[in-house]
Image (cartoon, rainbow, N blue to C red; front, side, top):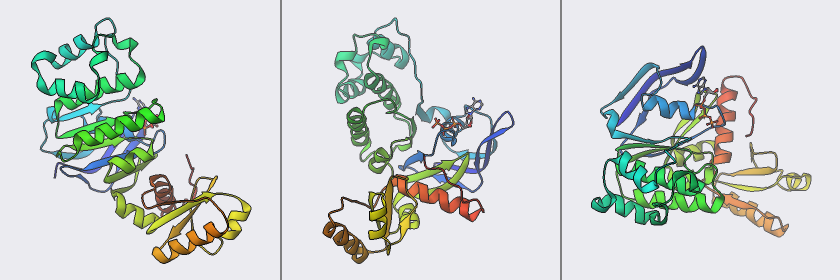
Length: 297
Ligand SMILES: Nc1ncnc2c1ncn2[C@@H]1O[C@H](COP(=O)(O)OP(=O)(O)OP(=O)(O)O)[C@@H](O)[C@H]1O
């Protein structure tokens, strides 16, 4: 066990920003996606783990603070120095003598950026600089908080694919905060779903999907006609522009697919849709506690 969290409460003044009321364990090598709407407590979780906030409760870990690395939101560096200088100063090394740093610079195609000043880097280049610095620490536990926010789709995908490839087969534990579900479908094997400072659920991605969605789901555009057509099938909670159907097994999935194809309706099939899964996890959580109101963000 790398980290065990028990009965954690984090307050900002009198506001309870995060509460983890059941034991939560993080194991070696896990890739944990942390999801939730704005203000859910994701960054608070990361900061608390790093010892940057005060809290009540227990965080048990054998790791020393220097064995945790973090890419936090809103990094900023001195803009009057070249990026080469920033890297060498902050990492206290020289690029020419550090083969690991050279490897990362090449891996992230960052050579051209070294002579530039920080402020003249593009959003994606700034993110790559921070990622290189975080990866240089090679920490057993590494946090990435919104590493691709503000980047266009293609840049995000490229960066995430690289990140994923870099860690392939490595034993570092990663906690990745992201609003982009498709990234976590690639990266995470576990999910921590937060909402308004509460843990909605925590567990293996596939287990959570089966728990809230079934074997697979089929999504199609919402609309009266599509609603009527799919009437016999079990509908999941979904964003208002979509109908999401839960498929209990292969036969049901094939039946629905055939029906939709026959009626010339476009649809998507998924067994890992984190967005639909988390909406339904939230619904179940609040229903259990007698509050059915769920916002779809
Ligand atoms: N330094 C702070 N002082 C006071 N309140 C704070 C502070 N930081 C966060 N909060 C509040 O705590 C709650 C959780 O915030 P947090 O930043 O952890 O959310 P988040 O899930 O990371 O949100 P986002 O997706 O918007 O980044 C919010 O209600 C926020 O307003």
